[in-house]
Image (cartoon, rainbow, N blue to C red):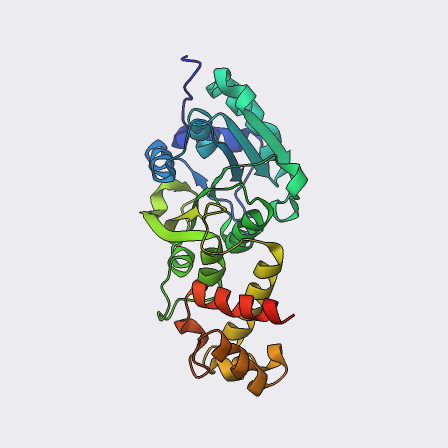
Length: 292
């Protein structure tokens, strides 16, 4: 076997590995295992990774994508919550990519409990995210690791649409704005049901985020601005049909104060939250921060 290459997993291998450790995929953990090597190659191509990248993979499962990542980049940190899968992964890598074992680090943990000190300066997040927690995990990783420059994640198709939605559309909302705080977000492909075991009932989509490079970003990605921005976004979309003047009155203390802040930021108080781009919310958040 070529030490610089990995033998990717097919349907038979996926079932054999799952059977070996008595794993039945669970909906609770959002487990649907990719068994199609071409899909793995498609994900890697869409991610456009560099050899020197340090990739975080959340939910490696049986290792389908992990093997492809290991032959593409110098370092992969896999975060797996299921103890059986976490125990099996190093063995799978040893057998199917024996020359690449040193590139893998494994963390047996819930991704939502990962702390900044757990992973050293990752530059990319590439994962088939568990669908039931995909957006919280995505935002948690982006918050913790400003070193991430590229995101390529597989999520439920409608979640992919929401993340990449444009202002003014019916599906534009909180995930769209919050993801847009970190970089340029776009759909990067669609994935059918039949490349998974078990086949999910829903289609999947790829989302790519090209994170803003500091110091050339359109706004700083500091904690204070993010916190102010995210609370404004949550308030604006909590009452989606209301004008911003009305929806944000609780946040500012009164409708009059909300209107004053909106006008100072160059935003029409009669507009609705779904019409504002991330840059508009950033401007409002900066206005709020300047007054504090």
